[in-house]
Structure formats: structure tokens, C-alpha cells
Image (tube, rainbow, N blue to C red; front, top):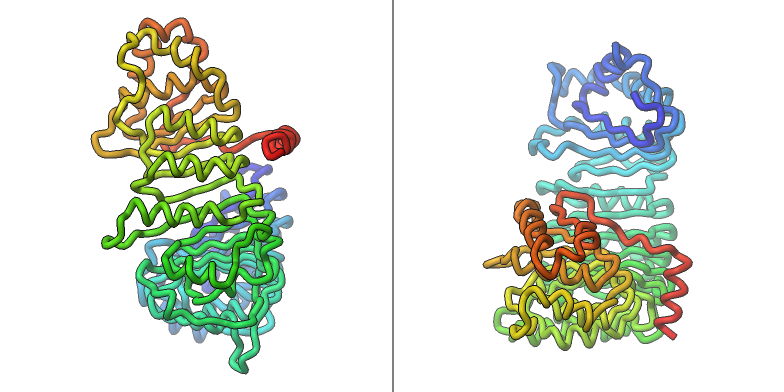
Length: 491
């Protein structure tokens, strides 16, 4: 037992709570004396299938179900008195049709809501009773959906409109979310404290068939907005009233989406001053010239918040014209993290990006097989040539994450990584697919020992080739230095 544990995780069959077996287990050795005085959050994973010998009918007629639930929640509060957040979710292997009656789940959620200030629900959609005990939920996430109606979740969301701070909905084709924005009497719902809104849905939703809400301003304090695939709302409703607060934006672009955003003048030269993270995805029409349409999407994306200090930019470019990309991206001097996961680059492309983006610290791209370095220079002289012509470069550049590509050549990629490390003083991490890690490390050791590289062995051995399963360093630039450098670059 770790007295300093701040996060607890408990996985059990849901009906064990209702019939008292969960509490019995917690009161037996070795758990009976466990306490977690510093625990702040509990991740409660429920197996929604019937895990005991008790049938659903037994649970319905049992007079002790509510008492069992109350005792279980009270015990959790006793062993973790500082608990502030509870995440209630289902196990991923839950079978369809085995859910227990919702009355028991309603009681469990209500009991937790009454004793824990912050609760997040993660579960497949199922009916939930609406009453005052479910009116203070701050986080709602419905994932693992396997069909069923969205109506119950919509009711729960609207019921908690005044307190919700985080809403993440997994939508299926045909789901109607009108009730999120509009009451039955035609009045609009407002979410005054909602700061994160995330919609996940299918690729084939047609924006033109989605509901519109003229005049509604439901999300006035939104800070994070993310549409994974086409927006389920047909107008600019999610963007209204929050241009001064929005800091993170994820959009799935279509021609209809771009036309709607332009028609409603959602993004203007002076809007969204706090926007720092932009992620754009799209799928081009096979009838379109892919490179040309991608360039159009990219230019639109880079026109978002031109005066904002965007520090992280992610785009799904498959066939880019890199010269145009670099020129366009170079206008956003404050970008620190650039994700072009499907874009192939060689070492000179990376150098061009580092020149255009002086604060770049993390880059995610593919590695191009062609070698742009002069072929009239002997291999052992290439390191000295790169140092003489390009060093120092990219003082903030720390991590290059390389996606796989057909005919992936790890020898060329290792060579480029070593050369970049020689001219970029802080490049210490290159992330590759885990299956290539041993090959990369072995070839790196071989190259470092070769003529032209071995005199830089101290510097090059700092370079780490890690698999994607490893921790990739985050952007860790001191705030004071970052602000000073940003001001210098912008001015």
C-alpha cells in the first residue's frame, strides 16, 4: 500500500456493489486496513455483465440494494477522505444486452454525486433517471457505444447544463443532438461553465443535413473544441461567443465546412487571440487533384487566428508541395510543435522548417528516401560540411518523431538524425516505430564509430532512438524564456 497514492483504480462487477460482495471483499484481509489519505481521484471500472450468481430479478426485489450501495460509497469515502474526482466507466469487453437494470446504476451515480464534487461518467448509452441528485455532474463522456439511442445521454447533458465543464460525445449515424442546444419549447440551452466540447462521429455524416440554431450562444466560455470527423451541427453555433476564450481547436475539414466558416466569418484577422493549438484533418475527394485540394485546406487552416500565438499545429498532408507548406507555416513564428505525420521530408526540408520556425521543438513527419546532400563530398566529410554550413540551427529543437513509410530506409534516417544532432544543439530524441528501435540503435553505434562522426562521439551519444511506446518528451520550455523569445521573434 502506498500512502502517497493520488490515483486509485478499482475494477469489479457492477452487481457486486448492489449485492454487497464488493464491500465484503474490501473489508477482508489484506484490504481491510488500506487507507489512501492523499488520493484525489478514483477510476471505477464496472463490468456491466452479471458477474455473480444473483439474477437481475433478485436485485430488483432485494430490499438491501440501496443500503449496499450507500455502504460501498461511504467506505470509499472513509479510505480516501480527500477524494475529489470519480471516473465511472465500463470495461471494454462488456457484451451488448447484458446491462443490469438502470435503477441500481441511477442510485449508485446519485450516491457518488452527493459525496464527490467532481464526477465523470464513461459508459455506453443507457436510460438514466433524471432527478435532483444528478444535477451537479461536471464531466460526461459516452464512449464504447454499440448502438442504442442517444436520447438518454442528451437528456442527462441538458439536465446538467449549468455545471458541465467537459462534454465528450460519441455519435452514431442518425443521432439527433438537437436537444443539446434547444428545449422542447424552442428556447436555447446554455452551458455557462463548459470549457471542453468534443464530438466523435462517422466520416460519412453530411454537414448539410445537420441542425442549425440561429441566434443560439450555448458555449460562451469554451476553451477546447474538437470535431473528430464532420461536425454534427450545420452552422457556426459551437463557435459563437467564445472567440476570446478558445485556446484549442480540432476540425475535420470539408468543402461545406470551409464554406460555412467563411460565410459566417468565424475566423477573422482579429479573432481568437488565445488560440494556441490547431489540429486539422480531411479526406480529399478522389475526383479532386489531391495536392491542390490539400493546399487549399492547408491555406485555410493557416488563416485561422493569424494574430494568435499558435504553438502547436497538426495537419494531415499526404501529397504536399513542401515549398508552399514551409512558406505558409513560416508565417506562424510561434509554432513549437508541428505534426505532419503523413508528410515525407528529407533532411533539407527539416532544416528549412527550422529556419522558418525558430521556436520549433517537436516535429512529427515521415522520412523521405531521396538523399539531397551533395554527392561530390566524401561521406566522412559530410559531418564537417553540415557543421560549417548550418550550425547552430534550431536551438529549441528537441524531438523528431518519424512515421513509417513504404521502403523505409533506416540507414538514411539514422544518418540524417546524426547530422541534425550535430547542427541542432538540443536534439536528443528521435522516435521511431518500436519494431525499428534495435535496428536504429545498432546502426547509430556503427555510424558513430566511423570516420567523420567519431570525433563527435560525446555529442552523438546523447541522441536517443526510442520506440513510440516510450515516453516522448513534452514541450518543456521555461515560461519566462518562452515569453521573452516569443516577443523577440514576433517583434
